[in-house]
Length: 374
Image (cartoon, rainbow, N blue to C red; front, side):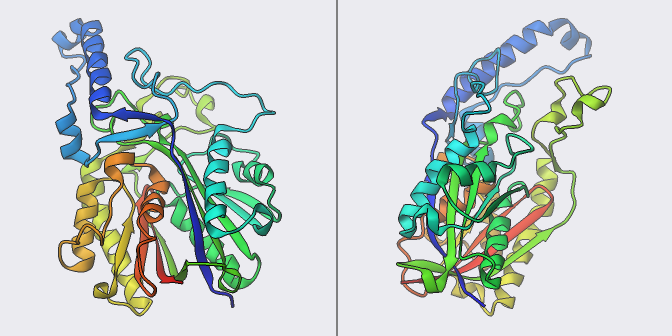
């Protein structure tokens, strides 16, 4: 049996920033346009008037102040309200593979590795730009890695599920080193015209190098234990898919073809599941919550993370115990916990204990208990 370790992480951050103020100006312009165009139906009660958003509302609801996106021109156009990405030929690298290449190169550099050292690439994300060929195989080709590659999707838990899959293969000896990559263009699945969620998501790509402890060259984190859980729920859902055009109403621009959630039910149901999962995982791995030095949680909503932190530690976490990047990056689905880990882990001392945890649609929860080693 081989001990898997995390030896490097990388983050690709898109060049475009949308602040809350910019987003609110565009959204409220769309609201004015919608309400004017539907004035008669609104007056008769057939259509409900749309309400304005505000920066204060966004911060209070989520803790988000801005987000990075691959395109902001379309999102901020009241006549478009979605990203505008250029059409690429089949001979060009896909946009997700391009993002992944940047994040992977940064992760490899931090790990002191080269592409030839990697024999597994997993692209794990909430959305993939095509069904096949796998984005992971394209990333494998662009990087020049050997071995094999595959895609996987467990929504916001994709990164931690991918880390478990890679860790299991390293333990079993079937691979020596792996890259788990999370390209998230969440701006593409977000309904920017819905006040309840128009502010939630941003774009990013993260990459994590995992390898055998016997091969590691520098400071790293031992993967002590991994655990995944799923429980079916419709409270976070996206009904888009390849069967869309085969159904009578599938060609319309239906609301359910983008991200949808019942926020109140998600908050009520997910938080106990995640807290119980984390506490059970720690206990089974032989640790108590008071031994934790840090938690890197899924960056979905500040109130959710605050609740989970209190439940796990039995008190309000100190800022360094539960760092957040939500205010800068917004919700980046599977990549959120890995951004947090990448930006808030180098300061930990030898022997420090931490847990990476992500959760989301499914419902799904994935956690990785790690220990700093130098």
